[in-house]
Each structure stands twice: as C-alpha cells, then as structure tokens.
Image (cartoon, rainbow, N blue to C red; front, side):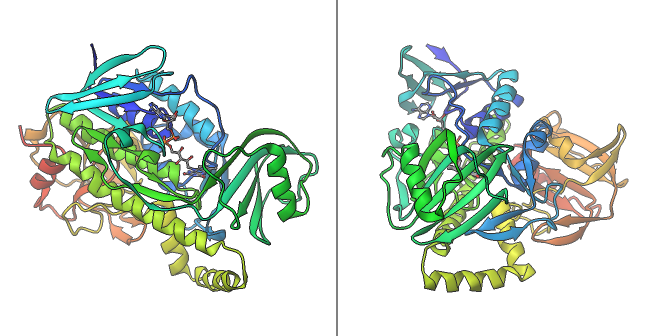
Length: 492
Ligand SMILES: Cc1cc2nc3c(=O)[nH]c(=O)nc-3n(C[C@H](O)[C@H](O)[C@H](O)COP(=O)(O)OP(=O)(O)OC[C@H]3O[C@@H](n4cnc5c(N)ncnc54)[C@H](O)[C@@H]3O)c2cc1C
C-alpha cells in the first residue's frame, strides 16, 4: 500500500496552500482531487489584506499583484468600507480571480513536490492510533496509509461527512446569481451596485472588456443543484436593472445562497477539516477564500512540528481553538450583512443608520479590521500588546543588509528576532528548530492594527504563520521558555 505522511483531499486554494506549507517543512504529502482536472472557474473575486500578507510571507504575492486590481475599499452589506489608512503594506482589497490564485498556488505546490493527483476522489477512510487508511475511488481505486488526513474538499466535504462531524447553522434565505460576461453596451462606471425591487444588482469590471454581473433576490431560494441558464440569468438581471447592458459570451454562470454552516469540530483524532469543508456562508464582504488560506497556514506548521516529533499532539488542538471562533465570527457577520441587504423601507432605514455609523472612524475601522482579518488575536497566554497578533512587516537591517520582517518567514519556520543590540537569549535547546535573527528596526514604534502604536520590542518570537508567540520590551526573557515549549516544542 502507498504510504505518505499527510493526505490532503481537495486542490482548491485551501488544499494547495496546506500542501505547500507541509512541503516547505519537508513533509510527504499526497494531494488528491475528485475532479478530472482544474475547472478554471473564476469564483472568488478578491483577497483581503491579511491573506495578501500571508502570501507575501511565503514570497507568493509578487506573482499575484500584477494580475489583480487594487480597490481601496471593501464593503459591509454593500456599504463601502475604506481600508486605506490600515496599518499594513496592503491597505486595500486586491480584485483578482480565484482561478488566477489557484493557478499560481498550483505552480508553487507542484514546484515544492505536491502536484495534484486528479480524478482521485476520497470515498472512505478508517483510522486507529497509528494512522489513517484513506480510500481513493475513481478510475484508479487505491488505498493510501498516512499519519493524517485533511479534508479541504469544499462545502460538501466527503471527509467531513465520513468523519460524522455535524455541520450546523442556518438555511438559505436569499439567492445570489452571477454571470461573467462581455458587455456590448457597458455602463460608464466600472463598479456599482443598486438596490432595486425584490433585490439588487451589481456590475464589477473584472478585466478590460470582461464584467461580473450579480443579481441578488430575496424573494426566492434556488435549490443548491438547480440549473441556472444564461438566458434565465439575463431575465433576472433585466427585471431588476431594466437593461442587460448587451451581455454576451458568458464564461461562467452560477448561483449560490446564504446558508451559513460550520463544522462543530475541526478535528476527529487524525482527521482535520479546513476551508469550505469547515465553514460555508454567503460571499458577502469576500471572506471565504481568505478564511481557507488562513486555516491552511495555521494548520500546516503545526502538523509538520508534530510529525517531526518536535511538538506534542496538543499543539494540533490549538488549530480548532484558534480557527473555529474566527469562522464563527465570519458566519455571524455575513448573516448581519444579508439582513442589511434585504429589500424594503425598514432595511433602507437600517442601512442609512449603519451608513452614518460607518462614517465614524471607530466603526469603519472595527468592521474593516474584521473583514480584512487584521484584528485577529490568538490566545498565546501573554498580555504583551503584540502577543497573539500578526507581526507587523517592520523594516529591518540585518547582517545581510536591509529587509523586512515578513521576508524572514519565507521558509515557514519559527523566528526569534532580537532587535537593536539586545542580548540573544540562550535557546540552545531549540537549536535547529528556530531561526535566530538579530537586526536593527527602522522605526522605534510599530503600528499594529486594532492596538495602535507600540514601541518596537527588544525581542519577539514569531510563529511560522506570522503570529507573535512571545515578545518582550526589556532584557527580561520571562515567559520565553514556556512560549518555545508550547509553540516550537519540548526542549531537546
Ligand atoms: C460566487 C462566489 C463568490 C465568492 N467570492 C469570494 C470573494 O470575493 N472572496 C473570498 O474570500 N471568497 C469568495 N468566495 C468563496 C470562495 O470561493 C471559497 O471560500 C473557496 O473556494 C474555498 O476554497 P476551498 O479550497 O476551501 O474549497 P474549494 O475551492 O471548494 O475546493 C474544494 C476542492 O475539493 C475537491 N473535492 C470535493 N470532493 C472531493 C473528494 N471526495 N475527494 C477529493 N477532492 C474533492 C473539489 O473538486 C475542489 O477542487 C466566493 C464564492 C462564490 C461561490
């Protein structure tokens, strides 16, 4: 029987990132997908700041930026949220098709040795203390023995169902329909949304000459598998917009609902769920793909550390404790956004009120940091203002010259960064599991979203996913040994 360390089900953005993260740590991976080949469906229309930072941490963002379009604002329930003063190198939304992101991630994962095995659906598994035996169906049925199985197999996840994990939440109340088309008579504005009758419609220019038209109807719920033809889409659009802008040459027509469900557990012993397999919700605010990318980056280094014998199994439980509340919050905010988009005079009044509130900086910032995921704070058992936050991408000078902090994370290894001539603590017992970097920081103060400005620390321990495990402002290293033991592993 074929053996590997981790089987990943699903070669969407979540599975691709996870495969690459594991390969960076030298873990053997088999990445399978049930489809015969990548569909190239455009799907998600953009990514947010924290996902851009994560892709940048691994050196992937430079390939993506030229293929996308910077949009200074995102939205909450269709109400504009300006991100331009957020403390990140990427204070904007990058409009870029999921198909482009998948193509680049596929190249990256393949270069690292995790090419997708297509036409290989997972059809079953059994597990015991020693590992998971995974059944692959399709034309080439086989069994693979692995230490872990991760279901990144989308909203209808076979892995989730086979694991018997409940997927609870709320049913659909609204139908979104979209068509990626060319327009013979395009509107003057490249991007706009309009409330109209039983729903609303919007137009987004994806690329020159190519548009995404969206209709949202609150007076009907289309069954999940129901067909939506281009002609039916055109009729819905005409009814709400009064024109079809001369739409033609559809590349993708689809519909979706606002069912919001989350896996009650993200782990069943040796089996994990990530991405849409763990949570589905309305694409309001554009958060789903971002959640999947961030799930994968949270789980990858933890699996690698446990597989290498560096860390104990307990580290794997922190995947669920850290990521489950983040997705629950997204489900919650998409429900609020759907409520804000319903037709009628009462919602119009609510929208006016919320719009007035968003004009207040504190409200705009609170909502924007949630949508961009820049405000996440994981519980690292420390009250230092940086602890549990994503580390800022501070400018640094090291012995090798000028760099910036996120570049230090390219190999997905933990980093102990000692700044401004402070003494490097004795961490010999974690040698070879940790990058130790000494540097001067370019600014005495670091700006941290949701916190404010804090003095650059004397030393900081950064996890491979870019979150701060420990920081100190003085020469004291109190708490460092505990943090290393928790996040890097037992001392040698
Ligand atoms: C219209 C629309 C607009 C969206 N807009 C945005 C947006 O702007 N921003 C954003 O962040 N998100 C957006 N999303 C959400 C985003 O598309 C998803 O969250 C994202 O695709 C999830 O990625 P994933 O890798 O977890 O799952 P998927 O992309 O669904 O990939 C799952 C993979 O698993 C495979 N698979 C299924 N069953 C099996 C099996 N048994 N064995 C092996 N493989 C299997 C599938 O073939 C598929 O390739 C949007 C979604 C839609 C529908």
